[in-house]
Length: 199
Image (cartoon, rainbow, N blue to C red; front, side, top):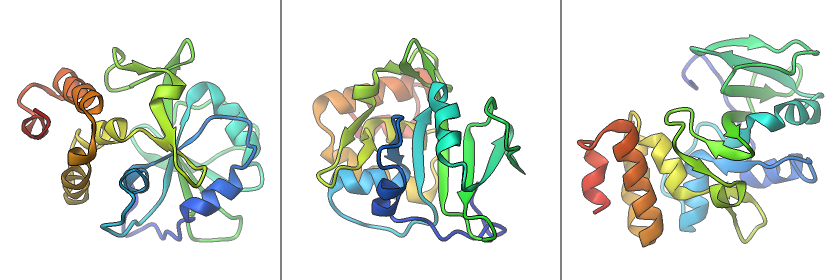
């Protein structure tokens, strides 16, 4: 959703870690930053920064960010200001900035959970434990597993997604590649162009 009409001054990953220190809920650095942290190198610029949380934790998340200007991207993507007493929303994307600022600082992606398992909203058959959903960087930052992040990017790949794919897929181990192959084939179809690079 970030685009020309939205001005971003994204937090750095380390600043996200400070903002969420002892937050009381699980969260993971997501998007391109998660892949670069996995790879240990940088290959492109980032217009925003994302974290992933699970919907059961949303009330705690919104309470944690009570001093931020919080906006909800209601399906199919209409951005609106959150009401102060609004803790139940179907939004998958939440944008945050400091009050009085025109610059967005953080995007929160909200994913579904079933019996405390991550459940893909694109394919409810895809489930992972919270432990398997991410990993912890040497800096202490929790990051979304690279195969899960690439699964998101495979839906409608943009040029930056293709660049991320080319950089990261060679670094995946066999189990990660198998999971990604199966997830893409079952969700986006067996003719998806990325599957050839995973065999």
